[in-house]
Length: 159
Image 1 (cartoon, helix red, strand yellow):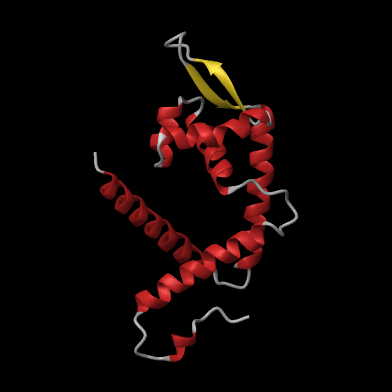
Image 2: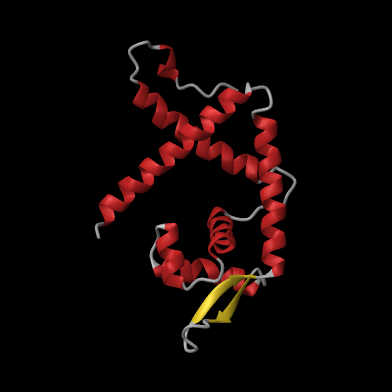
């Protein structure tokens, strides 16, 4: 199935119109592929939260919210089912015995590794016929685009 818009053949179509369209198609296709990859999927928010806990180690809700670029109430809402599923646990903060931190459990680490491996293999398959330099360029450009979106969002939220 073609992923170009009807206007794609029009040479006057601006690149930004095509880019926004391709991003919309990309988002839809990622959701479709994610549900059919043979690995029981984690929703995007859960995946990113588990990833962040793996990188940061135990963290409080505020630190997670800052790292993810969302507000604390969003993290609290998203982490609740992960705690219920045993993927995230609550641990006492060694610096402040009254405070609690969230931590990746061994079950959560295993689940994250399983989902990451499935996503990595899927990505490998999707770009298998691309030359290595195009794969690296796509990764670099996508990272740059994501950074631009992060900067844009941070600028809109203010200090």
